[in-house]
Amino acid sequence: MYLRDLDFKVISQCIHCGLCLPTCPTYDATKLERHSPRGRIQLMKHVAEGRLDITQTFGDEMYFCLGCLACETACPAGVNYTEMFEVARADIERAGVLNTEKRNWIRSVLLRGVFTRPWLLRLIGRVIWIYQASGAESLVRRLGLMRLAPRSLRELEPLAPRIRPDFSDNLISEIETPDHMRARVGMLTGCVQDLTYSHVNRDTVDVLLANGCEVVTPRSQHCCGSLHGHNGELETAREMARRNIDAMERSAGPLAELDAIVTNAGGCGSHLKHYDHLLHDDPAYAARARQWSVKVKDIHEFLFALGPARPSHSLAVDGRDVEVTYHESCHLCHGQKITRQPRDLLKLIPGLKLVELPEAGWCCGSAGVYNITQPEMSMKLLERKMANIGKTGASCVANGNPGCSVQLEAGVRMHGVEVEVAHPMTLLARAYRGDN
Image (cartoon, rainbow, N blue to C red):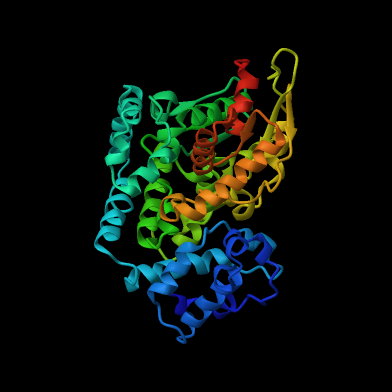
């Protein structure tokens, strides 16, 4: 689909009221109209109407947007910014206005290569783990060898996440059954989540078991496709959707036999819930994709609706409650409108005191690969987020998205602060298991 093919009602929904302006991180930083949702929508409308060509300037502007969707939350007219934004980026890629040899190579290797092949992603993850766990990483840093690397690599190195020694398939059986069953769910383990936070996936399964859920976890799952959908690779995103539907049906049987398909990654969940839109004109998958989208639930959303069991163990240390603050993943709070449920689940944990985070819903600067493609703006947002976390005095910041966790952990290392970054499911699992 092209911008010119979008329903006119979608492209003309913006009423130019400006209520989105204070919520947009890039507009807040620059005060330039073109860096606001309203300004970008106007540019997209001109392209759709044939009054503006797709140029490098247009492409740069669309990729300067974080895609945080705070504008959708603020919009009184219900503008579908997500659809316009993704179609605009697809238009940009088709037009090739941002093409360079380096950019084309990176996109080909990462988007159409590594992130479409789980075995290759895990192989790279294993190599990085060996580099980190063997002490080679520490030696390279002590000797200052990173100074010899290209500047772009030097800037990315501090953001490198810690790779886990075990992948999700090693920690979770394909089918795990509780003592007393209340529901049967499919479990999505993700791609980056599988490499860097496989323990969070194990914790999520433990929480589901503690709440009477049989958990079906397909082997060697594929990327959900959000990385592709947000970066103009819509056909690859569709292929990832097909592969994930197939994988879940192989392990769990017909989707109708599942009470829910659970995801613990806010950014992935926002995309996963729209497989019906992605595959609406695919005769072999359209009906299955509609059923998939109905079944997909964020873990906080699902548990809250199920009615969570209260943990019996306390997280208190030496009789003192642990103070935890909560950062909202953009695509969890703005994309999926899930804000209350994570907080209520955290409040359920004995020995945990929830401290509200100033600007909890303000983007941390991760935004998929934004911290790689727009490092300067990303770091400004991270500094703002870390300053707000510091104001809370909390010893732990909880959030429900792996991209945010990678960004926040980088902030913790850069600022030298002693704050744990944890998924709410990890905190809940500790309270259920009693392994504080």
